[in-house]
Structure formats: C-alpha cells, structure tokens
Image (tube, rainbow, N blue to C red):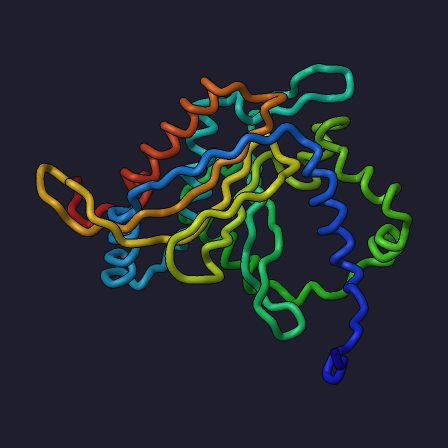
Length: 263
C-alpha cells in the first residue's frame, strides 16, 4: 500500500502529561457507576432565567454546585489515603473541572480548580468558569514545566502518585474531586468511562430525550448520562450508593437554580 499523503508529526510536549496521568490512573482500584438523571427541570430553569434576566448559568457550573453540595452531605467521600495508611478527609471541596478555552486558535478542554465549591453560590461558580474560559491562551509552558516534561517517563509519573502519598500536596495542585464534561463536545446521549487519580470523578456525558411517567402522565423528558467513578480503596459501595442517590436528588430537583415559579 502507498504512503502518499501520510505524515509524521511530533507529539506535543503537553501530551506527555496526559499519557503519564492516564497510565498511573489505570493502576487505581476504580469502580464506575453509569446513571441516568432527569435534567428537564434544571435545563428549563436555566433557559427561563436567561430569557427573563439575560443572565446565563452554565450547565457545568450547576453540576459542580450539586456535586459540592452532595459531598458536603457525605464528607467522607472527599478523602484520600496517604503513604502511612491514614485517611485525610478534607473540609473544602476543590473541584477540578474541564473548561473549554482557546489554545492556538482551537477550542479544547483544559483543567481548572474551583476552590471550596461547597461554600460557593452557583453564580460564583459560573462566573469563575466563564473567567477561566476567557483567560489568555495558556500555550507557553514555564521553564520548569518544560524541563519536567522532558524527564524520563518513569520519573515524570511519580507526580501522579501524589494523591496516594501526599494528599495535601495533591489537593493544592489538582483539587479533591473532578468533573470532566465530555458531553459538551458532541450531541446526543452516551456515557464515557475513564480512569482517574481522584477519589471521586464525574464524567458528564450526553443528553437525550426519552419518555417518562410524571404524575401519572407520559411526557418527553431530557436525561443526562453521568458516569460516577470512585476509588474503592477509599470509598465502599454503600456510602458510594448513598452519595449518588443524594447527587441525583439535587440534580433532578434543579437545586440552587432560580425558580421562575417562585416555589
């Protein structure tokens, strides 16, 4: 077979960090739960609020807000084991969220940590996400970052062992929980399953329209496909199930969003 049109391209230096992260994350004892949540009320409130006030509220910001509130109700989810076998339970829920921004003229997702999201309003979280999206193009790596990414892989990957060795250092660098919004890059339903270095991670998938009985009547509703990933070394099945139930209640009730009905 011919090779006309083929080309060789260098692997971007930043990509090495992603490769290292995924390789180390794959060694953790992760358990994935695929859930489907009715977000009709939440999306209606977001749309109505924008029509009436001109104020936009990001759907990702809403998910981050509900996640932080659910963890506040189940604080032992927000924890890591250290190298001495102790469990560090953090009071602040620092959410590492994927935001879409411009890098070298292309729109891609980059991580940003929202600190103490459990003590923030939904509007505050939304404003921070928007600020991160509009931040300057972060294409230039610092001198130390460039040197670190040029180290041999076996050395670089020790960075991603921080949550298992030094949880406080991991928190200051990357937060305590993670939200990655894969669904914002496409249309339709669908789940995504990915390894993670976090004790808890939400992977926001697609949104699809399906029939559902509401108050005895069949209606078309919007359902969010959400993957909830846990580190089973830290979180057992029963606490995880209770946390997911609480998270679902908050999301389906449109918790924290303005209610135009005044209820």
